[in-house]
Image (tube, rainbow, N blue to C red; front, side):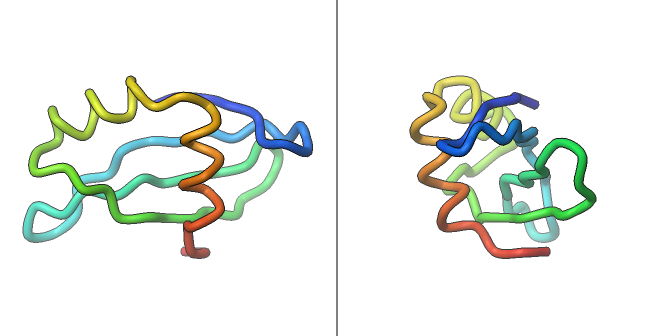
Amino acid sequence: MRRFHDASGTEWTVALSAGSYGSMTLMFSPAGDSAIFWLALEAATAAEGQDMLAGFSDAELCRRLDLAERW
């Protein structure tokens, strides 16, 4: 799990979720709101997904958030 700020200053939490059939997703949630957004992550395993999430810059997380869909 990580926290980052978008261009407008909103703080977001992003976490990795392991779905059915081994699919990995990033789950985004803004501070002070119950909204959740998701985006598929191109990771083969949870360990690989955690490594990817740890390596993403805040700018990369913002880019992926822009592509995410509301849950």
